[in-house]
Image (cartoon, rainbow, N blue to C red):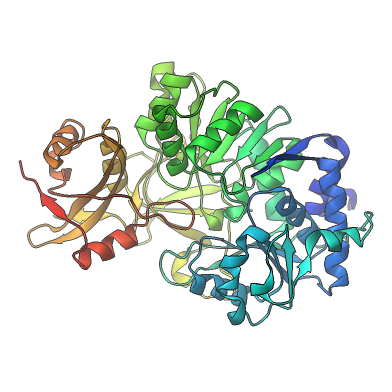
Length: 540
């Protein structure tokens, strides 16, 4: 006998209904220059219904793309639910893309409507004349809109509608959301998430073996909502009853410390560069520090250095939780939670690993010839992954090299052990091959950043006549700190293999970052090629 109840589609509108009904009084806090704006989940849900009605009145049909060019805030949350729940496709636009990349992704996705925060009008105005498919621009907030031509006001549109929009019954495999990769090489590639994949990913985020997001949590959502759906947290929030703190453009160490002190989050999500800046702000002493509300911090996007884990643990008793994923994986795929029974003094050995495979996805390591390697924690190859929230193709672009026998090739190099923990040595494009052996730029960076004088460090491969490639370490020193290349090399010599030690060093004012806050080694490699780095040679 076939059960129709158990075949009910897994839809984002179902997540919204659950949040509205069970967690109606839970709050979203939006930090603004004037203060903190507060709305309940019930209010957000009703406004999402009115936004859907307004978009439908503008002619948005099922399957058509609506782009958002917005900060992390309440209105963005309303769009997050309204657009996919009405059957359209939410396309979150990275506000930090170069203009040519931004116009490319809008045109490639064929966005019909754009919703833009008023403070971001100057950025969008740079590409307005290049947008071939956009018919309507909706501006959220007040500001001079003349640079965009004719626009509509967000609040006026919502004010003309009534709540009570009837969410359609969709196919759970319909496209719900689009997000483009950050485009560090070539044009960004579009990844499409279905209602089903988003629903399952949200469930995975609530399990205690992953992030364990729940009703007791209030989350400071630093990771941008355009970066893989804020790592899925904006959808998990309504499911879990987790409150959200939306920081908008206030992403520096000092305002983050103020938000933690005054709004009392229990968990926060952000890339390592953000938390490094929080440590800088703490040491600067310009902002009162009270981190006692935090039970943990989820860090992802790039490798989490051991010194940072130690700093938050030893100084504040806060666990940093490393997560691993990518745009193509929705992104949650692995989380570095130590196994049950791990002695306290050994937990950090697990926390520095990229993560333990989350239930619902499968992981393997493959050699260059495609053969599957043993999960022994020693065999090194490229990680491949598959699962119900892992993409199987890019939108409108063929890239067969990225997929292998139904598995996604991640581009990350490393090993997988028998407990499901990943250790990432490098990205395929960043690995340093010296004398036929691999040197991990990730481990070198993490180790040199443990030196008290170092604020940031990035390691790239440079050509070498004898060894083919050798590491160049680019260093940003802390304010008022000094350290020579010889001193840093001696520091490394006590912690890594001798043949790993960089012979070349460059002291720079800042490490260039990608649009999602990762070190942009492509820029560093180009600067080296153009002789724009002042390189110091050090030998033993």
